[in-house]
Structures are given as structure tokens and as C-alpha cells.
Length: 277
Image (cartoon, rainbow, N blue to C red):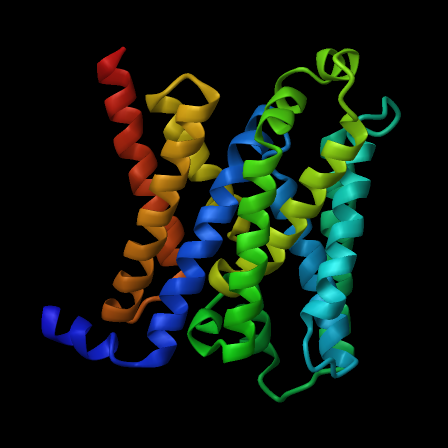
């Protein structure tokens, strides 16, 4: 097995997949804790479906870089979901369901009406479950993912204390003079970017689990926000790396393998957290 792994690591596409996969896992885990605490755990699922619809439109329009259309549309919908969740007339879960299902149906309809290839089912499966997308990244996509990941981490570190305040008590943060709307907007943009980046790794249907599992696992072991965040990052990175390696060696789908490893890690943390209490 070690010889097989050493052989695969000689190929640039495997190195690219590991680099991008680990960076995406790092970014997604940072916001996972915030999403769980703000009770927006399913926002990843909703935005992933939005990205699926936008990706379908970009494919039909023959965009050379589909992220140019997918990213802004996903950002706009992220803002609408978070702001809609703050209104009494439309609850957050209703907004997510409405935008999520509508985008998924619209995207699949577009892909059927304007099929870009004869293998429509393969294209849809690849987009929904990640399939081998992470192993076919171009050098331009790798550098774009690296650049966006660095920006996401820098934004989180720079505004850590503000995000912490907004996450736990928006009223107190507003009373303390913080621009709550701005930081909610910042969270929305970061989430949207992470969702678009994650589609290549785990597909649109598995993104929610990819983001939430490490945060829930960390919460079983630690109680403070900083400790939970750091533990979530460590778990997410390790599980993503292990999942990619396992999928390459076993020939299994990358996205579902990573989420399966995340689920196993959650089970272990659940046992450890129960025994320690």
C-alpha cells in the first residue's frame, strides 16, 4: 500500500488535490462553528444547491471560468438567506428551503434542456457528489483556490473577535458599537466562497456535512469558542487528507469518502466526549 501511495504522489494532479482539499477543509471548518451556533447549519446545503443552479447556467453559456458566474450568484443568495433569517415574516429555515429547492430544480432543468454533453447523468452525478472533480483541477484553478483560501483565513483571523461577538449575541455586539450588518455580510461572503470552492471536493449534496461534522465533533470535546474552532480545523484537515488518500487507494468517490471519515471522527469524539463527562 505504501508503494502504491508513493507512486500516486509522483503525479501532479494528486498533489494538487491534496493541497486544495486541505485548504478547503481548513476554510470550511473555521465557519462551521459559527454556522452551528447561529443555527444556520443547513445554509451550506442551501447555498450548494444555489451554486449547482448557477454552475448549470454557466455551463450552458460556455463560461471558460464558471466561478465567475457561480461565485457572485452564491454570494447574493447567502446574503438573502442570512437577512431573511433575521426577519419575522420569513424564518431562516424557510428561506433556505425555498432558495435551495428552487435552485436545484432550476439547475437540473437547465442541464436537461441544454445538455452540453451526451453523458448528462455523469455530469449531474459529478456536480452533486464531487466524484473526481478534485483530481482534474487545472493549474489555474489550483492557484485560484489557494488565493481564495488565504483570503478566507486572513479575514477570519483579522475579524475573529468581531465574528465571535456577532455569533453569540448580536444585540450586545450592536450595543457595543459593532456594525453587526457588516460582519453578517462578511460571514455571508466567506460562506459563499467556501461553498463554491468545496463543490470540486465533495459536490453540492455533501457540502453541509463536510462543513458541520468537524464543528459538531469539536463541540463534544471542548467548550470554549477558540478551542472548538482550533479542534474543528485540525479534525477537518486530517479527515480531508485521510479521505483523499483513502479514495485514491481504494478507488472510491472523493467527496463521499471524506464525509464518511468525518462521520467516523464524529463517532469517536462522541464516545470520548461521553466518557469524559
